Amino acid sequence: MNNDYATALFEAINDSAVLLDKTGRIVDWNQNATALFGYTKKEVIGRSLNLVYTQNYPFPRIIQEVLPLQKKWSEETFFVRKNGGKGICKTNVTLINDPQLNKPLALITHQLISTYKDEVAAMQISLEKKENETLEHRDALYFSHSMAIKNLIALEQAEKNLRESELRFHLLAENSTDIISRHTTDGIYIYLSVSCKTWLGYTPEELIGFNIFKLVHHDDLEKVKKAFNRRKSNDNHHSVTFRMRRKEGDYRWFENSLRLIRDEEKGYIKEIQSASRDVTERILDKKARLRGQQLAHVFRLSTMEEMASGMAHEISQPLAAIVNYTRGCVRYLEKGQDPSQLTEIMQKTVAQAERAGEVIHRLKNFFCKGQLLKTICAINSVIRETASFIRSELNASKTKIDFELTKDLPLISVDKIQLQQVILNLMQNAIEAMKETAHRDRRIHIQTKPADHNRIEITVSDTGPGFSKEIINKVFKPFFTTKAHGRGMGLAICRSIIEAHGGEFTINPNTNSHSWIRFTLPLV
Image (cartoon, rainbow, N blue to C red; front, side):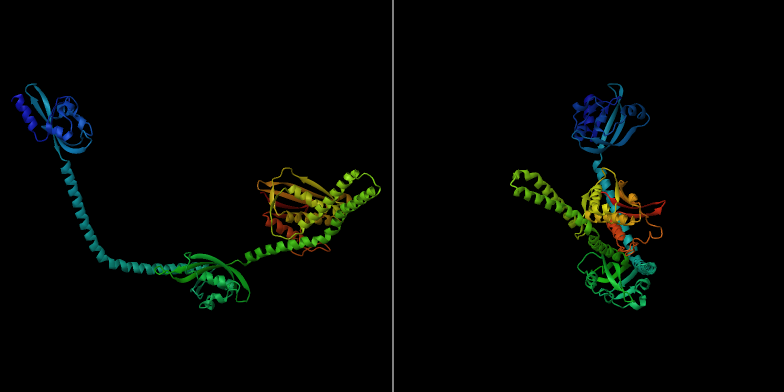
């Protein structure tokens, strides 16, 4: 067979045909190979055929080891065209002998099977779809036959769950300390837990069919009716606190958590569930604190009687000085002397007038009425200023004050007037407690220091007899007093003021001849 004939036959092969030498290098490349891969013969001669594959194949080993033992090597391969396009082909390798070169060559043919693969995949998808449809039809058939049974089972289960839910509701309600109740939208009781007997005095049977509105205090009735009738609100949970009349006739405060049960389809309120807790003590305690503030104001006013003489003495001193200075100026002018010499006397007059004004201003602030108005204060300054209020009383009773005040204490936020009331009351108590103590031993000791990183503490002690253990728990009771003319409100009000500021008020009984009162205040 001549070379031209062999070349024509090589080009006539319908598939892509490539000739490789035993090293796996391309020695020939037909037009169909160019059409399939996009490379010309000139571009590939002498190069590895792996140029067109997505992975490398060991063609030298295949040619030298595999083909001599079998007639053909075949495999599906993924290729990449010169333009980047990808495909799948069936690659067949056959060993042939070149009579002219007297050496073996490998003929590589490629059959494009991308379309075939796509068709097979499409057929597979179609078969799977048909299979799924068949399964769906089968499942639908099973479903249609089993729906009735499932519906019956579901209905039975729903009824069972409802019974269990009602049983749990009643179990929780009957063991709850709160009053659990159910109502119609107009307030009629349709269920009550047994705890209503404890808190209201009525048995559940006495209240079933009764309207809750008839038990509500008339001042709270409007807000209770509004809470029961929230048709336009999307909030199904809310709380309301109101007074209810017990069977004995007295009223108690109850905090009620209401839950509106709505129809799932139409949205209207079907019933109202309520959990009621007695909060009377909490409400009354809050009101008691408010009354305590009012009593504190009254107490400040009542202390005016005790302070009046001392304040009058303190004011009379600068006023007398002003009168004397003014008369001296008149005499000076009547003698016709140089008016310029009066400057120093007039400055002293002004200083005494300002001193009297300061005393009056302090007195006005102390006895003013108001709520808790906090300002930033330095505790040491407040203590020293308060001590100046009763300077005359201290002198008259020959009482000394020892200050042990820690420097650079953090600032506090307090109602200065109320805090001064506490300190003033403690100092006046100390003065009165030391009436039987020898004059030279009458001393009040006031100490300030940090309690921890959040508080400071103030300790007031004196050399009097202190508090015995027998009366230590009575001193905070209103109107309890050991004084002949005492009102029995001072220490109770002091503790109320300190606790209103977030502090603690403590009295240490007289043990080992040492008794003291200590209170803490939070830092800013």
